[in-house]
Length: 194
Image (cartoon, rainbow, N blue to C red; front, side, top):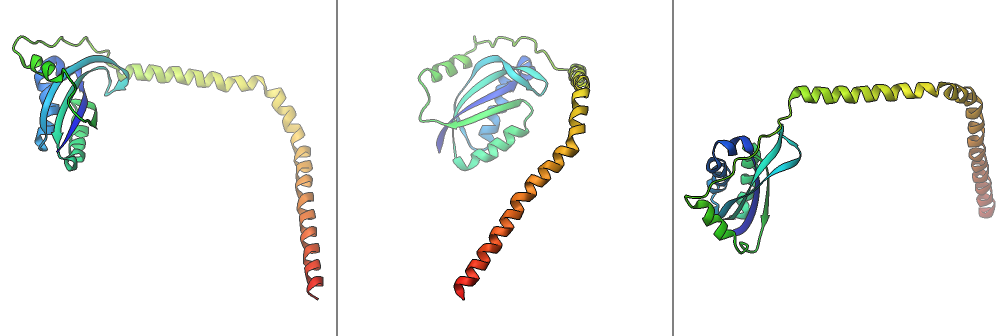
């Protein structure tokens, strides 16, 4: 059995209903697969760097547990399938940090209360459509910008056939020289052998 540290990002909707239930969801998955939970406590409630499952905030649960290394992959699969656990990170650790046991015990006491998370700014599909429309307007403006440069492009198009002929002649010249050089080398080799 190895000692692991797990950080679980929990959905604030479940946390608002009952912190202990949200906590039991994550620790229950660990215990289901034979892990022994040493400490489990609320770490923090934070704003997320990017939207996850249309949520901008989440509560973090810090857990230290002992488990069989072979069971970790099964635990990960169950955590990924669970809707309450939005993200997780499981790492091996050498020991439980000082103070974690005391914080765990303090959370288990009867007078401990979890502050209710602030309201989450839920991303609606209407907002997503508005942002897509805004992006579309930017794309339309960028499509119009090259039209102002149209005379310059027409001038380039007029020069193109002559430029292509010159490039073709330049490309053919080295190829012809290379072919002549290989013929000369072949003739030299045959004369040396004779």
